Length: 285
Image (tube, rainbow, N blue to C red; front, side):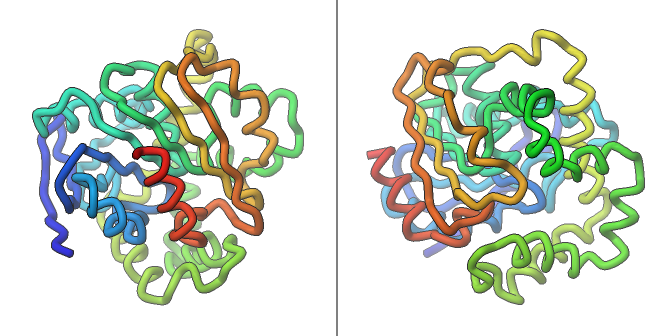
């Protein structure tokens, strides 16, 4: 399979992406701390029927990394993806996001629904519901300790940079149920991506921008989603509890379904690529 590396000028920055296949447009949005490479097990399967575009979101890997926390607000990043879709001379695309990529996918469906054909999110709750759980769910608050740690300027970067490889070994392989999901080569690719200037700060700024946005009352209101949506959830996620998925149906005016994968961590598309690929293809067909 031929994967092409390209750049697009959108929303005042340049985004790097890889693309493969032909057909309806599918945009893949990675989470923290990954980059387009996090979809390596999905790109070949999807490229058989679709034009697949796996993005380095702003702040990551080869994409531009604008300075300043305000440049990483979810709506701003969603605008990147909206303009990226238009750069392919398309009005809409199927959107698939994991972790923070899921957060941007939710935002895109809420703020720019005309751009989203079908929506698939992996292990990321609706952002507004996560904030509510911070106030009522002590177990989730404790699980999310790292989000608060990330708010201290420079401290997280210093702690992670001390041993970048160990950070990925613990965060990726260490949090996985299947320890074979991330090879030594995979870990090396992540280390290489995050050694780029400002990459670590750019990635962490997503969390900082999100916390600054909490004060905005409107940002805490759930906007109904009209797009047909599939939520895929690894049940043994150490960062995000399964209870974050309960009772979501009322926020959707389109079709909504949840598919759980047992004995699976937050890194669902890495641990069970065949299962996830099948779920995605069935939903999009």
